[in-house]
Length: 193
Image (cartoon, rainbow, N blue to C red):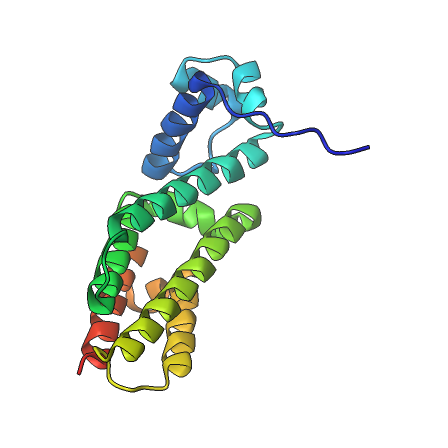
């Protein structure tokens, strides 16, 4: 039997996802119960269950919603930019801007809850892929030094992985947003002719 088609969320559900995103970004999500969330958002638990069948799945849905929305806005931000230097700068500025919205509690909960952490990892892998494309473009266009683009891109991927897993933040006490800003400075400083 084929799987049931996904229903598009209603306007109320989209608004609720936005409210949950704002709440989770400000306060984290691990300590909330569904009763807490229903009370804070002035809705019923059944309204929350319509979004996801459990608190854990709701957290993943909201985290995925955050990263998907951030990705879409970043892609809109760079649409029409042809210069690889500007692409990298604007792309990483967009990443930092969105991560700046996330409280330390949100980032801690994200790191400690595997299914939500996976949503961040998917997003980080996509960001690394996009940066690799921008580096390749810059080398092809002659605005970046003729570097081993695949090597630089892979090193960038490792840095993004270090940011996403929290390793860099723990070692040097910086936020993910600050680390992405520094990555942009490092890339542009090292690649420019």
